Length: 597
Image (cartoon, rainbow, N blue to C red; front, side):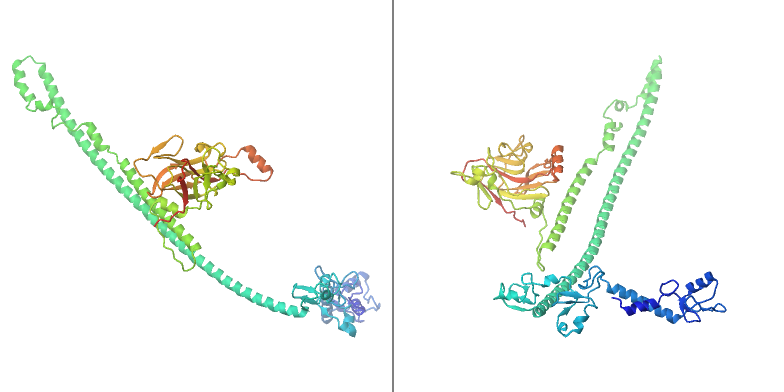
C-alpha cells in the first residue's frame, strides 16, 4: 500500500502545467521545473516570458536545457512505482490478504496459527509483537480449510502412519487413539526421502528407456536403410528377370521370323518354278492346237514326236516328281503355330515362379513373426513350405472346439470340445435347452470368423459317413436338413465310398484309399472353402465364389442408423460337423495341426 511520503514524492514529480509526470524536464532561472513542451507552449500562448508559479518576468526568453539528472531520477521513480503497483495488487491465481479491503493486496505469508494470510503491511505485527513472532509462518497458502480438521476444527499437525492420513491432536483421542502418529515435519522428511528414492529409480528407468528408445530408433533407421537397399536390389533382380524374358522373347520372335522368311523364300522359288512350267505348257499347248487344225497327215505325224516327248507320260502322271508340293502342304509348313507351346511353357514358368515367390513371401513373413515373438537369443529353424497345404498349415491354423449347445440331441461332445460321437441314453440338459439342430445330427464350432483365412483338421478314420465344412451364423437350425450353399452351408460329405461336394455332384473314390485326416481351409475374402487329404497332401474338393458377405436391406440400414448403430453384411462363419451312422464307434476328432517337416 502506498504511504503518504510516497504520495508527496509523486506530487513533486508532477509538472504544474500538465499535472503529469515530468517529460523532458527543464528548469527556469527562478528554479521551478516544467516539461519542455509545457513551458514553451505556455510562453507561446500567453505572449509573456514569465514563470507560471512565481510570476517572475524575464527580460528575454531563457535558453532552456533538459535537466538530465532530474530526468533520470523521474524515469527511475516511474519504473519503481509501476513495478510496485504491479507487485502489490493481487493477480488471478495469487493468494490475497485476508485483512485488506477492496482492492486486495497480495499476501506475503500465511500464519498457520491464525489461519489467515497477510500482505506486507498487515504482516508487520507478526514481525514486531513477541507472542505473534512464535506463530508458524509459511508461504501463502490458498486452501487453508484443507489444513484444518473438519471434525475438531483444529490444525492438522500429525500424520497417522496406519491410516496414511493427516490428523489433529484431538483425533488421537477418537478414531486414531491406538494408532502411531508422528509430527508432519517428520512424516514430511520420511516421505520426501521415499519420493527421492522413487524419483531416482524412475530417473534410472527413464534413462534406460531413453537409451533403449534411441537404440531402437537407430536400429529401425538401419533396418529401414537396409530394407530400402534390399528393395532396390530386389527391383534390380526383377528388372533383370524382365530384361531376360524380353531378350528370350525377342530371340523366339527372331527365330519364328527367320523360319517364316525361309518358308516365304521357298514359296517364292516354287511359284517361280511353277510359272516357268506353266509357260512351257502353254507354249506346247498352243503348238498342239495349231497342229490339230492341219489336214496334212504327214506334217502331223512328223511334228507330233517333238511335241510329245518321252516325258508325256510324266505330264499326265499325278505322282510326277516335277510337280511341286501341293498348296496345302506349303501352308502347313508356313503357318505352323507355336502359340500353344509358348502358352504351355509360360504357364509352367508362371506356376513355378509363383510357387517360389509364395514360399519366399511366407519365409519373409515367418522371419518377421519370429523376430517379434521369439525370445532374445532363441533361434528357430524354418522349414520352407514344399506345397500350398504346408503354407496353409504354417500360417492359417486355428484352434477349433465344438459348441455343445448347438449339437443335435443324438450327439455328445467331449468335455474338451474336441470329440464328437453318438449319444446312448437320455440326453443331457445341454442337449435339451441348447440352441441345437433339430432334424440332423449336426453341430457348430464355438469360434466364428468374419474375415481373413483359417484352417483346421479333423480325424475321420473312425467314421464312414460324415460331413465337414463351414456354416453361416444365420443358418436355420430348426429346419436345416441338407447342407447346400443356398442354405448357408459349404460342406464335403462322405457316403461310405464316395464324396459329395454340393447337392448336384458326386465323386466316386473307390479306386484309392479314403482319407484318415481331412483339412478344412477357408479364405473369407476370396470366398473359397477347400478340403484336403492331409496324409496324401492332395485337394479333395473346393467351393469357389462363395457368397459369405450379404447385402444389407435399405430399411434395416436406415433403422440401425436412426439408433446410431452400425450394421455389417459380414456374417460369421462357424466350423460345421456332422455324423450320420448310429454307431458307438462313429466319432470325429478335431486334431492339432501338425507342422510338417
